[in-house]
Image (cartoon, rainbow, N blue to C red; front, side, top):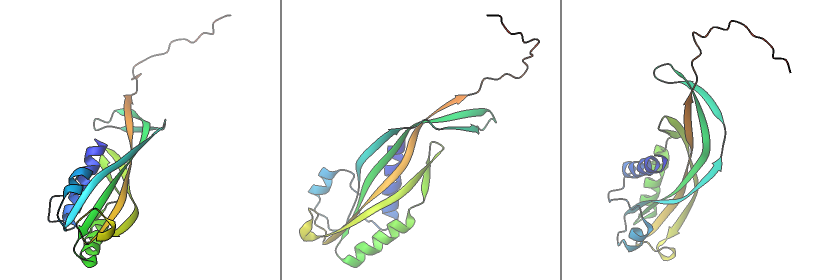
Length: 166
């Protein structure tokens, strides 16, 4: 659910920042666009790395469980904001950045959010119809987890321990 939750989160934040048109989610649709007031959330890449960390926690029924992080997942999206003037783009961009949380919860796991470098382009340097645009990369640092329970040994009685002879 990390991909879909992260993408929807960015789309919601873009709309809340003042985007009036429907945001684009594919490069092909963005290239065909004839709009000057524009916004987009494009998937860039996902990096995977093995991880074996374990944590102990209690679920809602107070049962003790182990959560193992099998993979680190880092998803990178590119958010594009374009408009007629520098001021309009910068205002929306600042509102967008200001609205980003430090992280979100996906399936009960905290996923930190980290904005990356921003790149400003003018109409002459871009395929977009906007007079000026900014694109910023946003990373979501999540993981793939596997939960296991503990074996209940309550009520087990040890009567005698004897060492076996070799």
